[in-house]
Length: 334
Image (tube, rainbow, N blue to C red; front, side, top):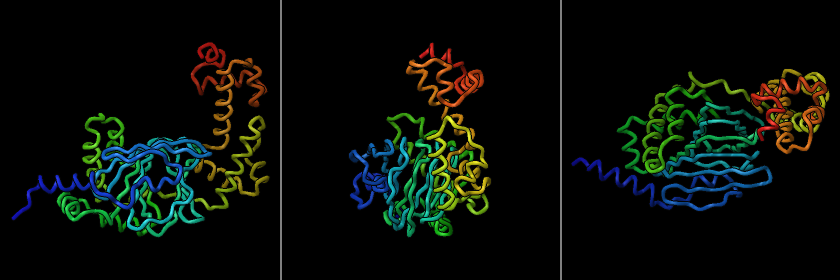
C-alpha cells in the first residue's frame, strides 16, 4: 500500500516546525548573537567591536535551514569549529566575504558568487573585509534529514549524496551563479511576507535540484587562494594607507616598505577588497569628503586639502564622478 503523499508532506512540515534539534544554524554565528527562535522565522542581532549584523533564520525542512545575512561588521565568529555532517551553501548578493580554511588559505566571495563547502573536519571562519555583506546561507545537516524527507528528495531527483561527495573532494567550491540560480535567490528577496515560508521551501528544492545536476569540477570558478602571509601583509598595507589617506604612495613604494612583490600586493589587495588599491583609496577619500560636506563646517577647498587633493578642481571632478553632483551642489542639498 502506497503511503498518502499528503500525509507524508504533513509529517515533514510538522517535523521541521516541531523538532528540537541539538544544532541550529545560528550556532555558527558565535557568541555575539542576541535574539530568540520562532517556529517560522527567528531573528537575531549580532554586535561586537567590529560592527553589527542581523540575520533571519527559517527552518525549511528537517535538517535544512535558510539564513538571510545583513552584515555591517568585520567578522561575526572567529572560532567556528568543524561540524560533522554539515553542508553550507552561500550566495553573495552584495559586498565581500572572506573564507578561511585552516590556518593558511584564504579566498573571497563577491557579488553573484555561489559557494558550497563541507564544514566537517575543517576549521572554517568567515569575515567581511569591507564591513559590508548581504547574502543567503543554506545549511544542510545530513544527520537530521528524516527518512520521509529523503524519500521526497529522491522522488524529486534531488541527490544530496552527490552534492555531499563534491564537498568532500575539495575544501571549497566557488562558482559564478548561473542565471537560474541568481533568479532563485533574487526572488527570495522579493517574495511577499505572508507566503515567504512556503515560497522558501519551494525555491530551496529548486536550488537543490539544479545543484544535483551541476558539474562542479567543470563549472567551478578557479578560486584564487592567498597565503596567510600575503593576506596579513595586505591588511597592514590597508591600515597604513587609510591612516595616511592624505598621502599618495606608489605601488612600488608600498611593496618595498612592506616587503611584498608589487604583483602579489596588487592581486591580493584586489582579491580582499574587490578593487585596485588606488580605486579603494580614492573612494575612501571621497567618503570622508561626503561626511565633511554633510557636517557643513568646512569649505569645499578646505575639504579638498584635508583629504589630500592639492587641486580643488580635481577634487570636484572626482566627487562629481562618484556622487553625480559637485561638492557645492551636494552641500546645498544636504
